[in-house]
Image (cartoon, rainbow, N blue to C red; front, side):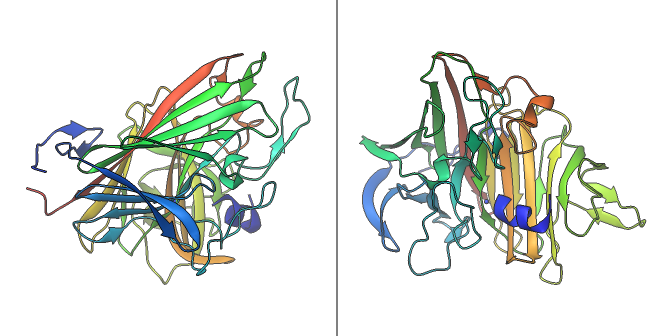
Length: 347
């Protein structure tokens, strides 16, 4: 993967309970209302702790905020007007922000299996650049997208199941009489600060490089130890820590072992905020990490924690690693992603 490809590939009362390595708070009433984000109609789902805002384009979550700390987790577009993606086009840095879905591929490629053999799959898939149908169901917000080049329907339903949690439930429907191979990945573009720390479950100890601009992780396909890694020059790195504004680098990597525990976390040193992302490892057994620090072509600093159904970004290539990222003829697959917002001030 070269620099250009990387730039375009890259987000009540207290009751203690352990949920995928985070604390869960007592459920409280939530509110769902219409609003406006930049020049776009938006939908805000919030309670006393969480405020999340969505637009129909890409069903993008444009904001995720911990109201206790006034902490925004997601990168915002810098333009005063919302920058829409164009179907079939590249995901550009000025458009890439917030949270959306990469489906049915990440990197553009050609579908290999009949009856869709030879069909071109666009950059970052289809659904990030489509306008999803929106439906409000009580205090739940539901988005649905229909496939353009493949016959599927993808629905995402968002709720606030507890005071500090936002949950997204997904339903993928195959509308054809043929088995369909796919790749789904979460795409949260997370704001960072120097000293941000990535925390992962114990099975995430050996990574495999997809891209390393500086070369500290070696070349494409090379394996390395995580989080402590000594590079080919003998320099020791703590890969769990964001380095700071003096660095110019960009990296993407996966983990060799399938996940046993479905969670990952990003911690912020300045105010004690953290976001924990949990998911079912039987449906999403792989995890990708993207770290960009003032990279050429996109001088932002950001991290993406990406649970996914298959590794290495392409539905043709990912079949070398897993045969389970598929949906049967007229079949259905379901999974969820939960964002838990924690902070050190909780007691």
